[in-house]
Length: 502
Image 1: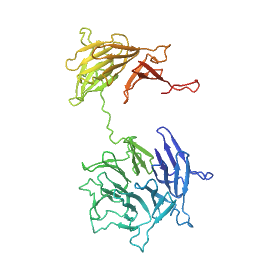
Image 2: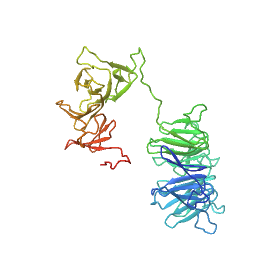
Image 3: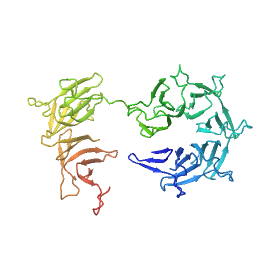
Image 4: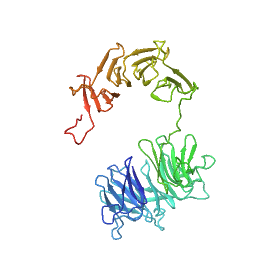
C-alpha cells in the first residue's frame, strides 16, 4: 500500500512503513514532500502529483524519482508545478496520463514523445475549459474525458478539441447542483455520478442532471463530497468534510460513519480526503488530519457462543478445539466438554457427553477435530484427545469407535478419493472408510523418505491432489502416492550446508 501525505511518500508492507522524502542533495529523490495525488500505471510505476514540485515518476525497483516540472521556456513542459489530480487513460497502453493542476488547467502527457499538451481556461473562448483549478478527471466507458473544477464540470470532445461546460443554474433544477465538482465516478451500470460541494448528481439523457435531494435520497443533497468510490458490492462510499457515508442505491439506504469522542474504533477524523478498496475488500480511508483508517465494510460485531454454567442453552465448555458447519447450517463444536450441536436459526443447543455405560456413545469429552463425510452428510468424523477416532451418526446419535490407542488426533482430512487422513501425536494414519483398513506412517531416522516427525498437526490436499502434512517441529512433508514416500521441506538455516526445495 502506498500513501501520499503532506510530509512524504509512505510504503506500507503490512507491518512497517518506509518513508520517502525530498533530499536537496539527491536529484533523484522526491521533488516535494507535499503529495496531492498519485496513481500506479500498469507498468508498475507510480506517478505522483505534488503541491509545488511538479510531477514525479517513481520506480519501486530502483527507488528513483524522475521529475517533470514547468519550464517557462519550453511549451511542451508541464504547465504548472502544483499537480492535484492524475488519471491514466485506459484506452492507451501506458502512454497517456491526464493531469489536473491548480492554476493552469489540464495537461495531457504523452510518454512516447515526453511532451505535455495544455488545456487552460480562456475567458474569450467558450469552448475552453471552464476553470484552471482542477479537482478531478475521469474518462467514461464511451471515451469522453470529464473534468471537475472549482467553477464547472467539463466534457472534452477529442475530435473537435473543444470543451463543453456545465454550471449550476439556480433557476434550473435539472442543472448540476453546484459548480464546484470534486469527484467523478461511473457506476457499474454505466451511470455517471458527480460529487459536488452540494451533493451527488447523476447525468441524464439530454445533458441534464438528477440531484439526490433530501426527501427522496436520504439527505445526499446537502453534503460536501470530496471523494467517492463504488465497492465490489455496488455500494457507494462517499467521503465528505463531515464524515463517511455508505449509500446503497438499490435499497435507498444510507449509513453515516463519523468520529466519536472516546470510541477508538470510530473514524479518526471526519474530513475524508480519499478512499480506496483493496483486492481483499478492505476499505482504506484517508483523512485531512487523522491519518489512515482501515475498515472491513461487511464486518459485524462478534456474536459470542459461550459456556454459561447451569444454562443448557450454551456451550458445554468454554474451551473449543474443533468446529464444523454441515450443509444444513448446523454448527458442530467440540472441546473439553464433549460435542455440541448448535442450531443458530432456532437458537437451540444439544450436548453429547461421554458415557461409560454405553459402548455406542462417546467415551471422552475431549474432542479435538470434527469434519463431515463428503459422501454422506449425516456422518461426522470426530478426533479425540487420547481416545481415538469416532464415526458419529447425526440421526441416531450412535458412535462407532476406531483407533483405540492413546494418540491425540489433531486434524482430520478427507481427500478426493474418500481416504481419511488422520494427523496424530504418534504419526500419520490413513483409513479406508469402507474397509476400515489402516495404514500408518512413522518417522524413521534411517530413512530420509519417511515422515519427518511423528507429531503431525495438519493435513491438506491441494488443487493438484497432492497431500501435504505439517508437523510440530520438523517442517512440512509432501506425500508421494506412487512410492509411498515423503519429500521434506524444512526451514532454511543459513549456517547449514544445504537445504531442500521442491
